[in-house]
Length: 328
Image (cartoon, rainbow, N blue to C red; front, side, top):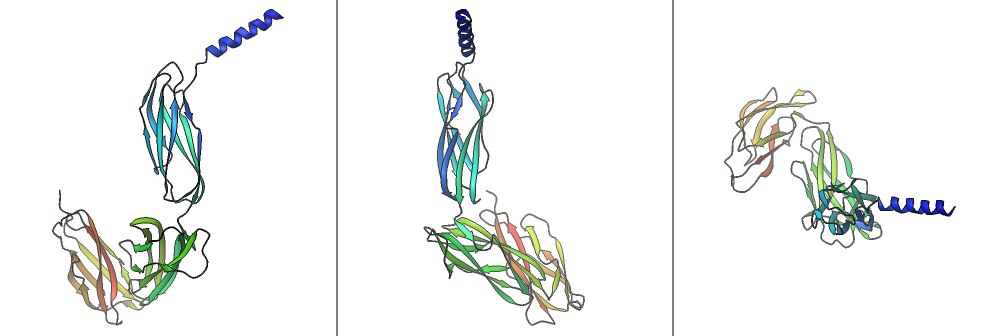
């Protein structure tokens, strides 16, 4: 029996000696706790190499583009270690979340994974989700109030519309009613001028602080009961690069082709009128190439004012274009 016990011990020792220590990534999990959306957090994992062979790191990959990763040195000698630094900008996805960091390379039998856990608390909480809907009748002016809660410590809050919409936004003001704990209630008013072709319009409204976008809300308005235009907006592209192009507008009302009295092209808009078929409701325009401007790309927008015989207010047709700027 003693000989059998001794033999078992020798087998166990031999087995242990045949399994050299393997590289490790520590800690395996980092819990950030509760963090705000947009907040930046920096943490460090340590890649240790206790084995007899060197390790060469080939890739350090994060599970999200919101991570910025770096390593002290990709070459880790036996007995050495390297720090892997993670800089996480918390995405605007409320609730519990997990992000991973994978390390791959020579001397690693498989990828080593570190995990970041956190609970995201949004900086801006909309009252009705991210999309606000409002119906509209052609020719009306409609105001749409967007209520939201914002992190109480953020004092400078503004709002702006992205280029390309038919709405205008006012500066945020305090809203009535209680806010969630840790927040204050604000409201922005979006104003629509619905002298535009019938159809559905969407507009992105950015809630900003110190020129940083905190949240993007989407407002939508469906215009009905008025004038139709095909197409209902014009996109000219890069007017300082593209060749001259022609565009045709067809305008109709409830009875058929809309009688056009005149059309006014806004100053600076790179279009000119070629022909107007007043009784058929057809306008032909052509783009006018603009000289390259100083600076980088610039998006610009304007309206065509189409005066109709049946209405006192003109039809507003949105036009968008951009210039590429002077080559550097």
